[in-house]
Image (cartoon, rainbow, N blue to C red; front, side, top):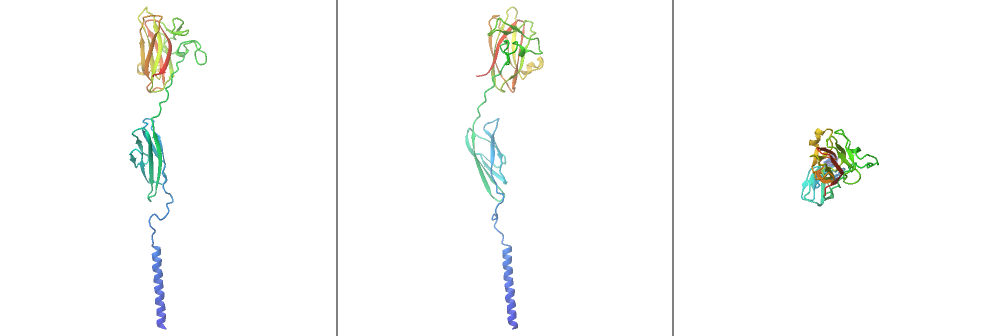
Length: 283
């Protein structure tokens, strides 16, 4: 009987040991890496913008989520691992750009976009509007004006108006020989960095040597001492062949960085007349 009881105890201890070993094996059975679902996998995305300075250059804004590394392929042989890279393309064309975004668990997401690289068309240049450009009465946009209202200034006396000789129409600007009358008009809108041609007509009396000067000014001036520094171009007309026959002048200039220009007209030595000012973008 005693042996039977001991046998039963041994069997019980062996069973408990087996159960313990099974429990230990279950508790320390580690799952393989990656077997748990990635709750925030990466999502690749980006946008692209063309440079206003160089049409071949594009900047890429990374809009990916839950990613730690990035692999860019710009479709032209260039690659990058930067977050927000910039790429300069070799020529116009369509390029397929891809971004592969990865996270620390090795999950990846790829986003592609076709980029069409093309040089933008140049916008049409502004055709400047010169008020009372032919010095005619009632020629302002509202139907008023005495032909010289737009040319009044603080640099000299107001110009005079003549009815003969004129280049066309009924009136022209007149500058007496004393040289104390000045015509000035500012705030004439232009397109920056654009070539223009300003056309006008002048004539000089022949009794004394003299000249009439038209200057194109970048922006404007508040004092004649500023003229030389702000001048874009000028022309000194000194043709005194005929007091009645107008001489045509085509004055070329570039507007530079200016969005507006001014026109200054002065004379010296001889009575002068000037008519029909116009400005056109150069062809």
